[in-house]
Image (cartoon, rainbow, N blue to C red; front, side, top):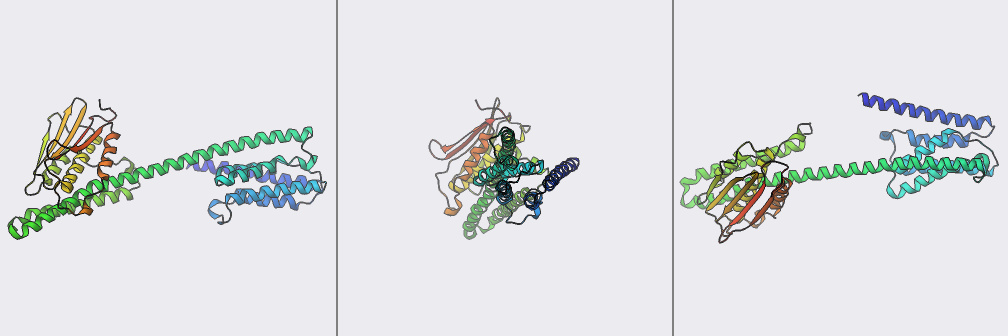
Length: 391
């Protein structure tokens, strides 16, 4: 509140100075006995361009119009005074007004127009001395032109610097939004695709068991119900992240930990398929949450790919190893690539791409490829502490 009131006070002072200077200019012209309508037209157009509230400006009052029209009117007044042979002293009001227009042109006009409108405003300012000297080559008006050039350079430089800050801020916001979209897409892929793939596999198993072993359907149907419930919960969590704009949203931790890996292994298997978790006792639960979450995502994506591409695998092994300051996560299977899923459910390789980005962000490395003989292996190795590097 204090900052806003301070800005409002400073703006009020600036507006007051500009209006007082404009009134002084009109008084100067009137005292010399010349017509007042030219400066009044210039100031009405210029003050409207500078002071019109942004939220109430009509759509046609673009930065180009706001800066070019008053600058052209000022230059026309100078031409009128010269042609009418009227020696009129120019006051500070029009100088301040043209500097404001120059600032607006350089900072807010679209790139092609910024140069044009800035040149018009700066040029109108530099020819002001011609109103009383009818020449810009004499010593006194030439001195005014030099001072004007310095003012034009300072104002244009400041406006250009602020414009560059605006551009950098826009790029940073766009990049942040892009990263957020990628993170949300990764969450949708990692969690929802995992559960939905499980639903597909278990549904196919249930269809095969319906004819020959109907009495064994209950565990499979329970697994389908559990996977569907978890998929809906993941969707609700992702939507909650999208809707949550409070300060706690920025501090939301990644989902998943080492305990979640054990649950993944327990819930993964289908009849005829066994998942074994081989966890080194040196892998403790006190690892940083970012590291645990990354390990969870590696296992989750690898198991999802087993369902998609190696449904014939009989043995799947999840191994967690700690070697000094390094954590190694390995998921292997003995499948030969047999799958009963429809082509549309196979995925497009986005999971491994996102997984590699997640692992490398922690300073780690990811490998995925066939094993010697049958099967496939996914292995991730990264520092057990965030900020470290893999040797």
